[in-house]
Length: 222
Image (cartoon, rainbow, N blue to C red; front, side, top):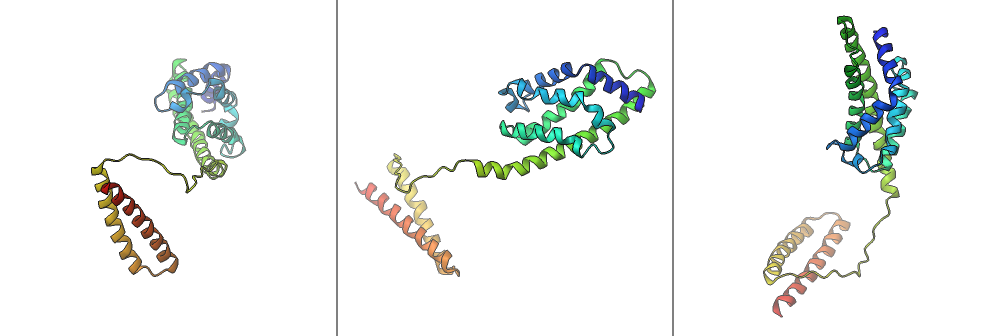
C-alpha cells in the first residue's frame, strides 16, 4: 500500500494548484453548493491548496483525527463566517475528496492488479480522513451557532408602532370568526389553568382579542 500511496501523494503534491483549481471550479458551479457561487475563489481555493499540499502528513499520520485536522476547523470557521450552510460545506468536502481520485484516474495511476488492490486500501484511508474532517466541521459549526445568535443584532419593534393593513369586509368577517373562536378557547383555558402566572397571561390575551374584535365590529359597522 505504501508504494501506491507514495505515488498518489507525489502526484497530488506536484499538481496541488491544478487539482485545487479544478475543485474550486466544481464548487463554484455545482447546484448543491450555491453559497460558493457568490464567493470569490480566493476565499476557499487556498484551503484546498493547503490540504492537497499537506495530505501526506494526514495520510501517514498515526492519529489523523487530532491536531492535523485543525486545517478543516479553520476552513469551517471561515466558511461559517461567509454564510456557507453546513450541508453545502460537507458536500464541498466530498467534492474535495472526489477530485483526488478523479485526478488519479485521469493520470492512470491504476495500472496493475496490485495497484488496484492498493488503491482500494488508499481509498479507505482517504475516506477515514474525510470522515474525521466532516465530524470536526459539523461539531465546529454547532459550537459557532450560539455565538452567531448572540452576535446577531436584535430587531426590536416598539409596541406603539401601528401597521396599516387594508382588508375587505369579507376578510374582516373571517378574521372576526377566527378571533371569536380564539376568545372562547382562551376562556376555557383560563378556567382550567392551575398556574396563576399562566392564568394571568391568558387573561391578558383575552383582553387583547376582545380589543381587536371591538375594532373589527367598529370597522364593519361603518
